[in-house]
Length: 613
Image (tube, rainbow, N blue to C red):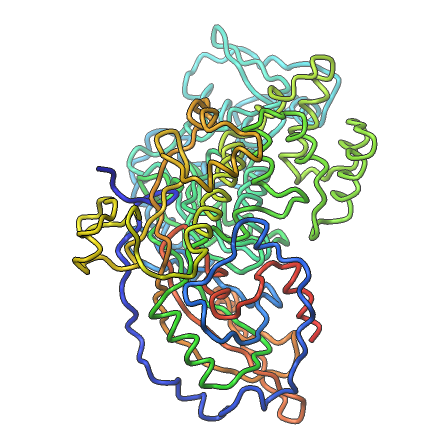
């Protein structure tokens, strides 16, 4: 019998909410929210993106909805990761004090002289290099690094092994475009398209210092994968050298742990000097590299603006969310913001339509993209001119650049399956997993079609030991199993899809045997995901504000920098916002909890139509 798990790991058992059932104290000042601001008129919702990815049902179908707007500003949505140890991850300081103490202890008896210069700046490293090789050679290295026509430089013979190790280390640290090789105690320096950065960090790492530098990644209005890509580009390392436990929302302010293999904290904290949507802090050295799934959940602090309802309705909605939970759909973030959406790219991969998949990744229109990227995509859609698209595509768009360069090299072979292989494996897996999530959403909506919230014969549930059982008449009559025990498997090579999923696959020209025989890089596994989740609601309150630009909840970085929430202008027209703090298990989406409250499409495209109100 299989043990229940979500898309990455087993769900922990849901803790019941510890919050009081009483209305928060400050609500007494606003007895009827609808009286604070003139009743808004909601624009007609013509296109619901949620419907397109199978999101259609509610945990409590009879609940009266209330109006509100989510993510008016990205500062209205705050996410703090909860570690495997149950600690809420927060950015509390930007210095390296704790890491420095660990280094000092580890370097008390340094293993070699390189350890002593690990934390130096680039100019200081150049000075160290000048101490061990002639200055004219250093000048030649500078020229070679700046794309000189010269192919390579040979450094005069050096007998001492320790000095040779220092030279390798210093050149690779100071000159990002160069690589070194050695033969017969002689070092050759040459251009390199890819720097073997792991070797760079292996040199001189103190044996007593833990292998990984861990820190808190704080980001604003940028998704985790883009943040990781930016960091790898700035540090000239592979993206795989950066570990992270989960992918956080883009349109939000988020804090999460990340790890770097053998990377000095002083070098990392230097990245904070750049103007960026990324900050690093709370540095320490640890023995374990983070991997996807190394978290228990996330804590959310959310602002829902322009609330318009009676207090009694609002209270009933929140109490229903605590009691009944919400349908645990994979939220819209899972499906991306490409014109065709990531799950459709996954479908094309399963259909083996490789060229269409590449074209969608390069030419798909996005709604929140910078002008240069949009122009580059337009060039590809209209002309398929690789050189023109490459010229316009910003260097930060690493995945698009990778595909375009692969096409440029393979233009005669026209092998689009091979071209797609140039993307990192975790990125390619993301597409087929998105399609797997789409199928799960569709299956759940089909199961809940009748709005009958009772367990049925044939349902799969979790028993007290965390194992999956199939319901029969005796189990239903026993009354031991509740709706919150209901699980539905994600489709995989060892699953048995329901009739609705099989019919959908048939309509989309995908044989189930195709999923069962996928190669290891695209393999889909069967996991059991809870259909209903009850959030741990820590607190909620109402707050008046006067305009959409006011900051109503401070981020971790705001607190460090000493910012304060904007004060209400008593003479201006006041609106009301709901401030909600809740925690969810990993792989659960807060937007789906908000959807249960608001009964409105949570897509940014629809919510944007409400912001002007």
